[in-house]
Image (tube, rainbow, N blue to C red; front, side, top):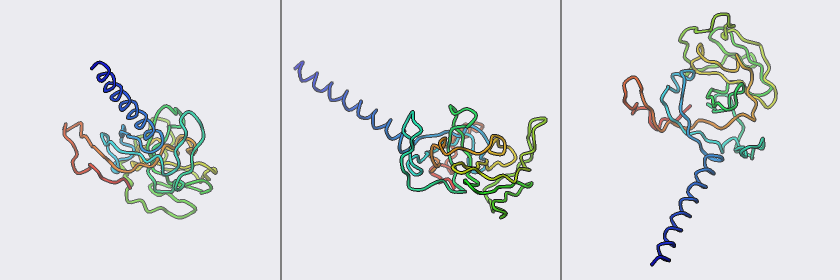
Length: 203
């Protein structure tokens, strides 16, 4: 009887260990959860949105290394991407890719030009400037050519976002993955879920 009990206990322990290994594998190489902490991507993403990040699409990085496995494609302008903040890689940020390596970008007022063409950005919000005293107005930037292997990232809440206009282009090495969809959304002011946002794809 004791032997049977030990056998059942061993099966439970092995199942739990396999579940932990599988969870860690999926988080490292396939998908990761992320919570929106700020308003820099408003109205596309709101504070309290919880989303899944596809780490497989661009090629996942092997943990604790700078080695990236092959992916299905490279980041493209328009992708919403989660990445390690270049000024503090222990923090994760989320912004939209506006230009990739080799492209020349210029910001003039409310307009973004890439290779001389003005982008059509229906998702962008202009809520008015909120810049720290003495800071440069990020609505006037460039022209700037993005280095090879790097991305130019900007928040959709264009007037209230610390992004590549402030801290420079993003090295591909810091990219974690593309935001896929919102799986939960909580309105802290109303203390109620935002039901209409749940399972909404991120574009």
